[in-house]
Every structure is written in structure tokens, then in C-alpha cells.
Image 1 (cartoon, rainbow, N blue to C red):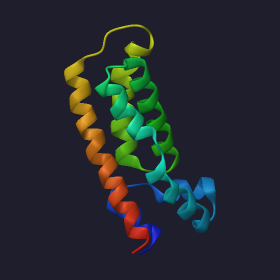
Image 2: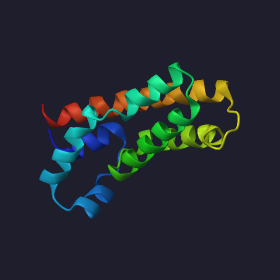
Image 3: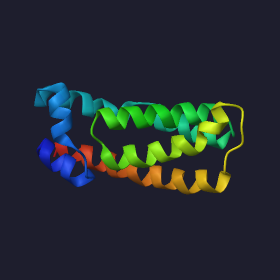
Image 4: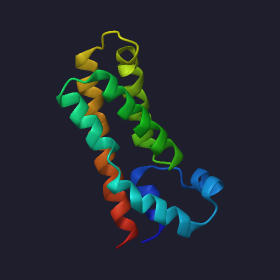
Length: 122
């Protein structure tokens, strides 16, 4: 399937990625690396161990990667999660219930993104 189908399935922004990366082959290669990135696993692990500064860094990294790759739904929820976790990065407290809800949203958006990426190879 095409990049267009992949990005449509996830609600992503292919045109902005094309503006940055220019070539569809390059986009396919870089998008294909995303499922192997450890950032999401780092986020889950940090939350499980209640390492809030690490959770913030992972959410912030996921936000940046998803923004740069045009994964709009994942960007939006990881951005919101990073905002809720930001106080932990500065030594403050976080709203655990809000983190749980947003983390569930991130999990769904992450899976949607992975499922859409699989379309490229079908």
C-alpha cells in the first residue's frame, strides 16, 4: 500500500513530512524505523517504576518524534501527556489520574500508528 494509505489510516500529516524529508523512499525508510524505537517502551517502564522525570523525558521525546514524522494523533496525546508530566521534571507533583488517562490515550494512538505503518508493507 501507499504512504497516503498509511497516513490516512492514522490521521497523519504526510504533506508536512514530504515538505521536510522530500522523498517518499526516505519517508518509508524513516517511518519503518519507528516500530523499533524504544521511546514508548521507556515511557511505559518509567510509569511502571514511577520514575516521573524519566516518564516526562520519554513523553517529550515521543511528542517530538511523532510531530516530526507527521503522526498527528500520537503527537497530540503525547504532547498533552508531556504537559501533565512536566512538573515532575522540575521536582513537582503530577496528577496521577490525568497521567493514567493520557497514557491510555497514548497507548491507543501508538497502536493506531503501528497498525498504519504495517499498511505500507502490505
